[in-house]
Image 1 (cartoon, rainbow, N blue to C red):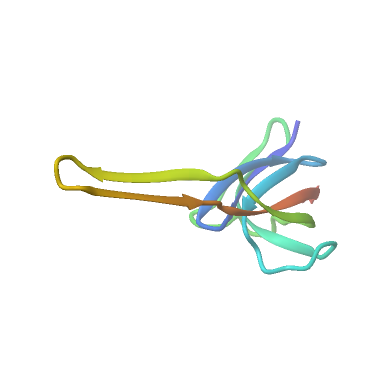
Image 2: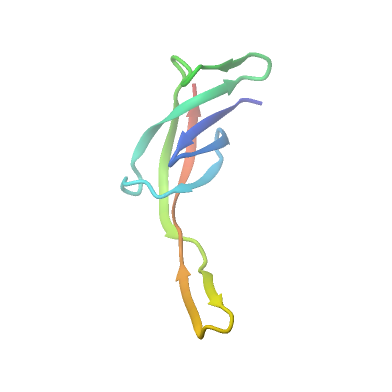
Length: 102
């Protein structure tokens, strides 16, 4: 079972070949192929970890779609001061399909 640890959008994700991963929004068109930064990789018994990135390692992914997560409500209140504020927030995401780990 081979997998890799990638970094995108300031976060790290554990990915396997054929998996779909939701990452923070990327500025790529649907269907575009891209290479991701690899922090660590393993192919069953041999593990490679780089000081920053693994030399020669490459994860190729295809953009499946873009979307937005369900709304969360941000509510602020200060008691006895007649202060209430309600805001909603929807975080954007991009779904990637992992094509290859090498």
